[in-house]
Image (tube, rainbow, N blue to C red; front, side, top):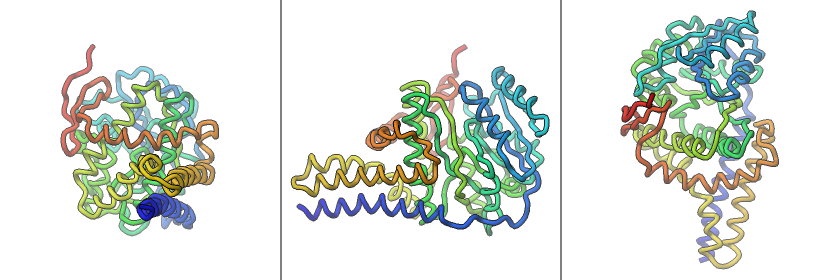
Length: 393
């Protein structure tokens, strides 16, 4: 049976090494040069209060250095008094920048609140380029210069970046951060190396106004839960390509406790179930299962090897897999993420990798219900939202 363990070891270790090499190769590419300056850049941010880091994230984006002319469009709910206070105070501190605070009525319960706000924001934005930026996401200095030139590449309709988390205020925030920081680069980049991207990171992306108008804008997507996949699919349906760029943008989200943590992870995993898994063609679906879904369970295979097999090969497989996985993560954390994960929290990475298979199975088998802004919603097959119960008074 030694040959079985050797074959399994080769599979598991090759998956880690080949994806790592894809990441290294991706970041060694020379930056894309802009063919033309974009003119005014409109940065649209749907905003909801509640996270203690909100003001710091918004202020960091105002302070980000760039050579491009920008306008900020902050889209808030009319009944969100805290968001109104934060936005107006920050805008008053920066009279040198164009910041528009737009108050909107709450969307219908079965409508995706982010898309509802983007429809309103796109209608008033004046920029040649429109950027969508989540309220917990921060653009680094020079981030626009790194990303927007990709819109000049032939056939590209949308450019997007890569997220990583910087929130380590408590255990639950740290678990989310370690999950994203150990998987983001090893998911988005290897897939884009073998297939055209089929979805985007919805935390930040950019497209030209003329492109958005050519595809019909965001209208008609309001009932779709996975807004990133919905926008990506609309552009691909009109013949546009999606460009994965080397822009790395930090995110600060405070995860309050175990229930918040489990709900967040479950939503992230349910969304692909009802979008990617139900709408991709055979080739893209095979790549998605082979490069993204199947490797989720590799840590369990490695951990089970010493329990199921006899002899040194099974033990070497487990030790080698987890040692290589951690070494790859440590290199990415230091080389690309600016050591975002503190060394004292890095022990959580193997724990996250071992927990993810169980969380994935739970998301695949869980009822298609989520709680969004207090409303209980059902995610229909294919990703549309249907109201089950409104939030109480």
